[in-house]
Image (cartoon, rainbow, N blue to C red; front, side):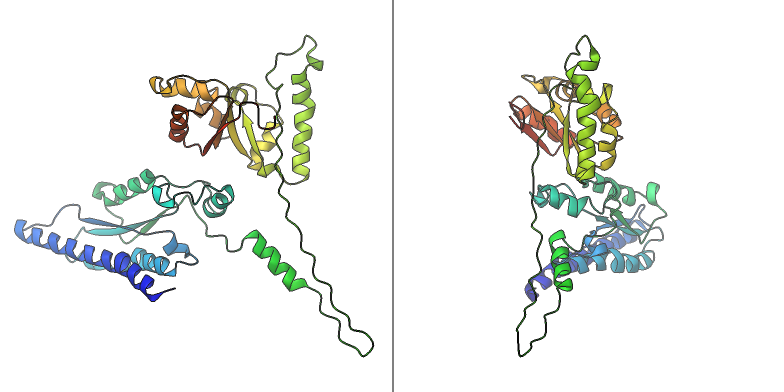
Length: 351
């Protein structure tokens, strides 16, 4: 790491924060002398980071600076600030990943999203700016947090830490550690130990399009396509995915009305596995902006978003697939609901 980067980061994050606090308290002291009384609700809230709590490989200058602020500086200033004002407080907020323009497309890859913001986060999501702002407003309020000082509150979804090794790194190290020793050289024969065989990583994309889940049943329901799919095909497919340990890695596009009103036994293990769910939509509207939220949800999702989440045990669908073109109003609606993507599939994903 260049020394210039280290010094520049510390000038902005550490020295800049120190000077801001210093001149803020000087101004407060001057006002108290002018008014001859203590200022009410004198509070400071610093912006820390999860990096200051868990560290961040490749960014020691940022992580160490934030750690010094949210722990060392806050813990020290809390004992000094009360000499200026008997009820003055200082605290910090340490956000994890926050959905802002600053992160760009860094989490667009589902694998990166899982590794950085889901695998060690119980809530399995990244924060919105409002989550951080509300926590800071709480700490700044003497009425709400008047007896809290010197603390650092994490806004990271309950993050437990970081993944240290990627899957390919663990596999490489395992092969290197267990390679058989070379056979000693002799006068009669020279023998070399065989090269360790490396497993080839094969990625398979499988799309299964089930079209009879909502078809009208035949007169003899026991022989209808819907009955066969529900009672035989889907349970068998789920058992196959469980057998090969890939059920949790699948994404299921299901219509909202089907999830809510006709949820089947075969969907239960899918939901428990942690597999992703997305909505398969059918209908569209020329001007969604003229419709209220409830009508938009019912039109695009088949049911209200709250009903769909309830059917999935509190989980929210992550995406949307439609047989119509994904127009700007649809994109705006998906963004409003916090969906990660919308797919235009006029003939089905596998047709």
